[in-house]
Image (cartoon, rainbow, N blue to C red; front, side):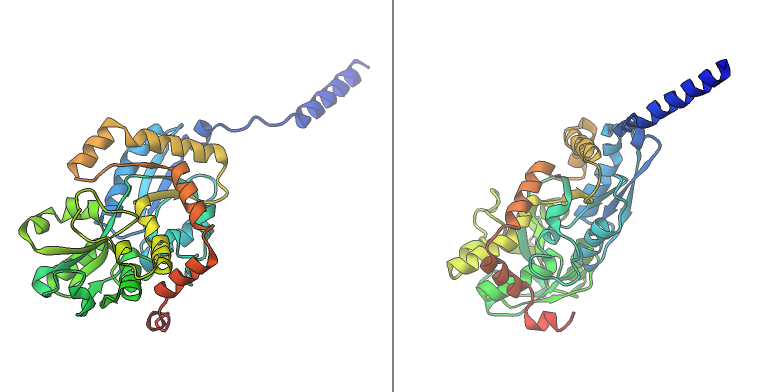
Length: 349
């Protein structure tokens, strides 16, 4: 009889335990012993790659559980390959993190066909710096010295693809202000493009972050080897007061609205994301770790050593900006779409 009572009590206890919710795994428990892969949307050697690898060196110390952080380059299609991967393929458990090209934010809106994601559904983690983009020429390869000159004479510029600023911005300026930029696609990174104009393969680059120019092309600026023609963004850089802003060259309010949509992502700079579906507590933990990394004295010292500017944006700020872009009027979006998909480019797809 006693044994039956013991059995009955054991069964009752087992049923009670089964009915109790399992203790949620903490973020630290999850990340302990794990590897966090950082997928970099460009090839090695450029500013995007430099920021991503610097983050990889320090963010792990601020994530609960201190995972091993491994950077992995995933270039292609002007950053679209990495964006598609993070949205469609990457693990949704918090072990994948992407450093994207800012231009990929609006590619689905403007109907770049290889964009299979919805940027408003990413979990935005943060950005190392706000930016303004510029268009430059290699002085030895062309006599073009101003944006007005580029409206009169063809300028061949390097491009990483239509999904990237270097591919999209020349087409946008051609459409809205009448320049004659001719993009040559196929370069894997901004560094490859700069090497290409040093070699004389192309004459310039339209879509180069001003912070990157100052850190990686300071000697060229000093020696007059490059000439800045125009800047693209929502406002001028403080230290480029005399270089025209593309928005100010718009011919009418409708064109300006479309250009504002296209150039707005430049403000976001160098954004990082996690995939849709990652548990909210892990997203928040990585966002917090990112914010701590941005003020980590060793991180800041290394950024300064590499001449990488820091002017961070939080993940929440980026999330809000992206959400607003995705609510813009259809007419403005359509005008931008046409500018970024001219017939001659659509025929190449």
